[in-house]
Length: 326
Image (cartoon, rainbow, N blue to C red; front, side, top):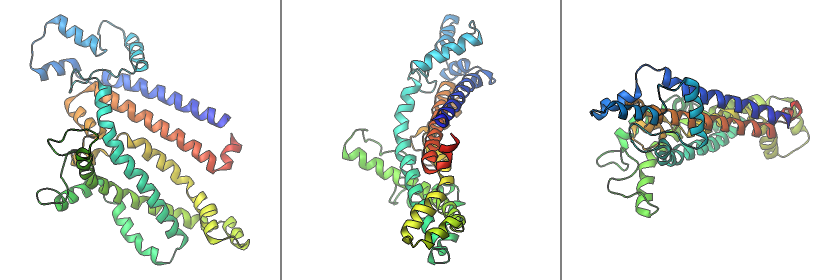
């Protein structure tokens, strides 16, 4: 129990530090976001209107930094992430909530599927070292070294565009109204398949390699030899003894991947113009949309922290030594 409380305290402190940095960084950056918004709008505003914008975005120059900081916390506790410059006057929370399901559907599904398939194949490849499974190693090594976006560009050139079986960009066909009907769902799935395959192929290969190497290391341990000497079934030794212990290092890596699901695979979403959080982040950077940047960074940070806390809890269940240390 003390282990859980210590980890929870650590993550709460980290969340406070991340929120504080998220507040400070836009205010320390050169330039003036409100003036940038006015210049993009190409309009003339009087002094009172400009001052109202500063107050609206929490940048009131008449307030001290501490007053702005406490006001920022008050906004967060109300679930208010501010207003987006790019989609003004749409709230940042609404922009993120519109794009988040797209990212979860694409990156969430592919991350979990790649981990399960890659780990399973890695267990078999490591347990049956020297068999036909070793023929997979050159292929997996090559695929794991290919960046997502590069494979995406190749996939678009070969499989998308006019005459291709897959669309080249977007989340659904033009003219289709987003709703829970088969026309929209079918169009969304068709647009998701190609970017999902590019992520799945490269990330699954990495899990195969890492799990195989860990299985080979674990197979040399004494407790595996003792398990064989007891006459335990091979399947039980492979899954209950070898795979369970070999899986421990991969839990942390998988937790990081889960945390990054919310941010999406940025370059893949850019390549396919996929309407996820990563693509919104790219647009926010180009438009100097500070409130949207802050909101996305905050969601990313909190999702990574929650995923790591989840990994710590799973690690505690898999490794009894962690519970004893607590």
